[in-house]
Image (tube, rainbow, N blue to C red; front, side, top):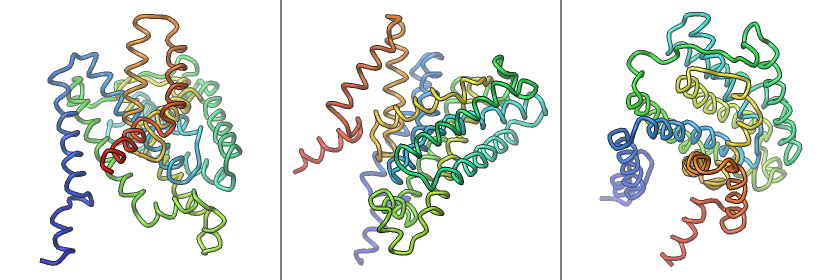
Length: 321
C-alpha cells in the first residue's frame, strides 16, 4: 500500500482521521440537544447556530482576506426581508422564498463588493458600514414594502418545521453544510490566494493575481452564506424589522467572530454561543448586562486576543510540545 493510499484511507471528506472523528462527535452531540433541553433552550441553541453562520461568513473576509466588513448584518437582513415578503405578500412557498432570499443577499453582496474591494483597512470598514446604513435607511423608510418601523410578519416556516426540535435539526443540517463548504473554500487554491492577499497584497499583484477580482468573489461568496443565515433567521422569528439590518447586527457578528477567534472559521460558533448565552444569563440577573458584556470583551482582548478557539489551539500546541 502506497503512502497516498494510506493517506486517503485515513481521511474522510478532506479531513484527517482525528479531525473527522472530532467533527462527527460534535455534530452527534449537537443533534442530541433537543432531547435534553427545554423549548426555550432549544430556541437559544438554534439562534447560536444561525449567528454562528453569520460570524463564519464575516470571518471568511476578515480572517482569510484581511477585510473586516460592517455590512454583513445588512446582507443578512436583506435575505430575511425577502423571505418574509415573498411568503407573506407574494404567497410563495417557503423553499422558493428561501432561495430568493439567498439570491437577493448574494446580489447585495456583489454590489457591496464592487464598491468596496478597491479599499482596505479602515476605509473598507467605513465603506461597508455606510453601505449597510443605506440598506437600513431603505428598510426604515420604504414603508409600503418593508412596513417601516413596524416591520413585517408572516408564517415563513413550512409545516414540517413548526416544532422547535424539527427546526433546530434543519438549522443544524444547514450549519453543517455551510461549515463544510466554507472550510473547503478557504482551504482551496482560491482560499490560499485570499490568504496571500491578506499577508501581502502588493506581492500578490506582482505575481500576476487580480486582487480586486479575488476579493470581489470572496466578498460575494461570504455574503451568500450570510444570506443563508438571514433566511434561516427569518424562518426562526417569522418577523423582520429595521433592527434586523441595523449596524448592531453587523457589530454583533464581528464580536462573535473576534470572541471565537479571527481566522479560525469555526470559532464563529463558539463566539456566538458565548455571547448569546452570556446575554441571556446576565440579563436575567441585572439590567446592566451590556456593561458585563463590555468587560468580558475587554478581558478577552487582554488575555486571549486570538479568541477562545485560538487560545485553546495555543494551549494544546504547548502541551503537545
